[in-house]
Length: 581
Image (tube, rainbow, N blue to C red):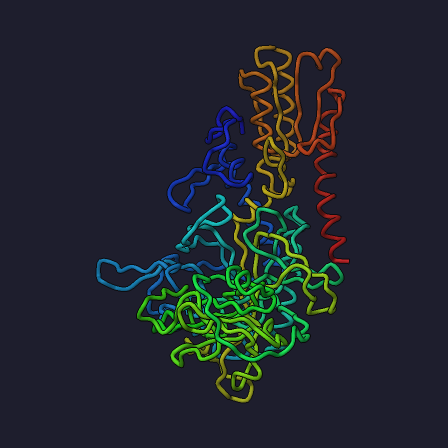
């Protein structure tokens, strides 16, 4: 390929709508083009990257006995009715009707399609276990797409589904996939990816893990322990509190607190500590609008995912009106309306004398003791973890919070879908049973963008050689110079003949513009041919990460490039080998 013929323009200015570096560089570098909110077209350069990522994934999936299939993007709503997700999933699922008024959906995940594909095939225990996987476009109607390919509405995903006859067999294969995913990220050049325990969300199941690339621009909060290997997504991280007694018991009293509707205002007015206050966060059930209140200690934040899991259905931030049974700004657990479903967080345990809303306009209680003043007190974990908290694994106060981008996930789904969709098999005793499923996903475009985010400088991406759009770029600095052009042409042809993916820039442009484009293309190895260096019968060979910069004799240049390319691949292989040990 010649740069002159490469479809997609490269430019210097950072687009104003790009909030992270990878988005800006991939737009500037001619990788992608905005089509609509959260929707992009991919230029050839990005397709070469994503194709290589897909091939790495495919090799690993095939190596663990995966069988590639393809599901439709458009699915009948009946399948989602069977699983129950047509109603339970929110507006992220795009629903529509066709010309015959048949209800349809655009697939955002394909669990239903996977069950539908194999439920007639796998009616005997002799067919198990097996795993099927696909690469397919999906559509998720995100409310707030952001950061280019990091969070989009339309995307390509590899999703795999395994089927088993026992939980033991699922767990065994789950570990096999767990290790395969680690190898995928090693081979793709991002060994920085870590695994964290996660919440299964709408996918269902009891056990799940996410693969997170730690980066300050990540959209997820990751809870890590500095003393042990504990790692979890904020949504799933257990919040450990000491439960030690705070303060001394006092008489319950209702105090007028005019215009004090926030924790800060109340504590300032009463000259009390925020650690002895009770914060109310209010939601409503999507099914019937019933109020759900989560109470946490004043210095903590509610974990909406934990609360939603306890409620057992979708919830949304409440709208409290004058006719509501709640008084905004003055909500507390004592004497709260019986119409309200409420939960008390573990952080409230041990507070002997608490400040909380009195459920009356302009008033709060002081001296509230939950164990004394409420009946049948039950504490649950619904708060977000804070830095410095106690680790639930090692028990040390060594929790830190970092940001990360999710690049993969795996779930133990159990029988959630096979039971709902009546997929059964006959076991060795002649009894009908539901297969047990696992699910394993990787977003291909997001992975490409995440690698760019992890490996770039101010000039462009620094692609690992395993997924780089081209392995080598040859730059001819003077195409109007006969000798320079011939040497560069021969180098380009020779490298291609040697099976090396090479892009060639022989345009009549200034060296600065040529190097700027080369930085944006991000080939790991660059060969620069110029009249000045040819006077000494040499060419300049550099790596995109600037680790190598050598003047090499012209007659040895091709062999040098071949050896350097092999070294870069060997470095990645050594990471994989080190991980496996």
